[in-house]
Amino acid sequence: MQEKTSRLNMILGRHDVRMNASRRVRIPSDWYVAMGEPAQVRLMPDPHEKCLDLMTPEVFDEGLSQVKRDSERRELADGLEHESVLLRVGAGRRITIPPHLREFAGIGDICVLEGAAHMIKLRRLEFPTREEILASPLLNDILNEMDKVKGLNPNAMKFAVNATKNS
Image 1: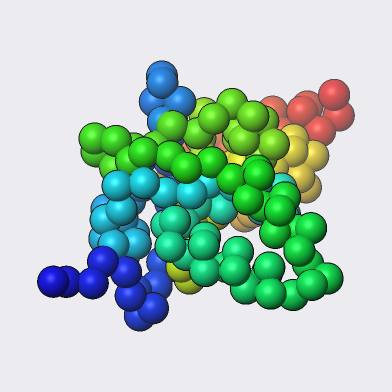
Image 2: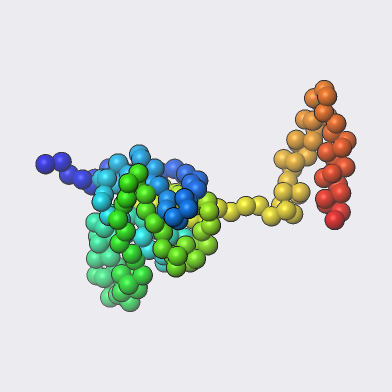
């Protein structure tokens, strides 16, 4: 019999994924395989960051038992157990993120999945503010490159950028 989970299977990287109309998100196939192709997963609010942690029930239980052994962290263990949700992995490796957890993490239509060793962190996609974009040196580099390209009118672009900065 093949063992489903392995300490050697690491989940690393990042995927930006769009939720479907049913508020489901697809687990990337290579990460799903690294998790041991579970029929169920545990989803919980991260105790340290404003994001969600997704893991197999086995990884959750192992972490929980480690926390429970520390008498000073027993209350944390009770909270983690209470706040976590056991989810069925549906067709196409999709999971439905409950509304209260989406709200906790501030997750909208696009969700960032980050591999974090033996779990997946689900985060809100952060967009730069208008001020950050306008102050970006990259914008000036783009305008300078436009100066070199024939047929483009960089002055019109610079005018639009300056008008936006001044508004």
